[in-house]
Image 1 (cartoon, rainbow, N blue to C red):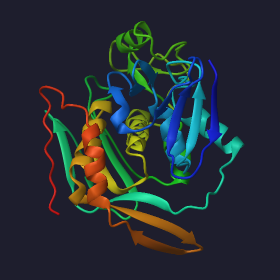
Image 2 (cartoon, rainbow, N blue to C red):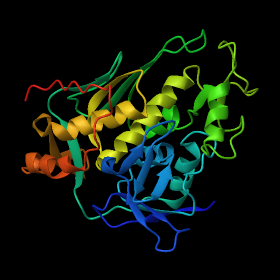
Image 3 (spheres, rainbow, N blue to C red):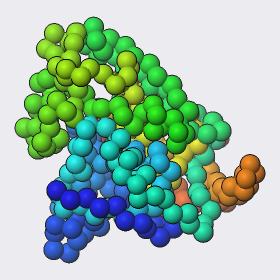
Image 4 (cartoon, helix red, strand yellow):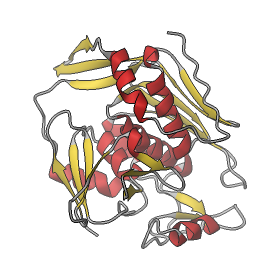
Length: 304
């Protein structure tokens, strides 16, 4: 498997190219291209697929990279060590190129909530990008973990990027049986013992709360599919890839709850220019929504 990340022009976003296929089809990393959220996030165009995009997208977003062309000769982004850290190191070696363009940010102006059963995810106005995550699973080891972080480039690299994917032993085996996390071993996934009290990895955890930190990593990667950085506080209660997609779709359906803002940094000065086409932008992306899953319930809360 080979994966190469190339520089891309300003304002094109992140794009995947399948170099193993004859016409090298392109799949933009956008929420309207999501075709599956079971086990991992998969994007596609026609019959072409790219699965397990979330760790690489998190590395790009966490490294402050908005535009990139990713050439890959497989249907799945390599699992690496189960975290975003190897991608972060590769990006640091390659370096970042400044571009002559204002950076566009999607700024939340009113709260938006999406829920499915007893699981929910909410985004509120915030001057920056913050995530508060909570998980609660069966068993003593994962009974409950909470983690809140102001997502900056420095904190992403130090506190989030190294958190690895995890699952119960039987779930990990299910991933491999379904062609995901190929080549997976205990070197790239945290396998939770059948007794739900311990892990099989002899090297232990990288953080005491590595499980919830990885959920935050996944969320950062999935939200990159909005196509721009986000200013808001995301509060995720037992969320997963499907819930992340539901929130993004609800954001797009509620253009009165957000606005596009352009930033230019000059020393400590930040100049802001509100893009006045926010609502028309929402109308343009609305037709791309995938149908709501049966049994799920979007509950937008927005006071514009």
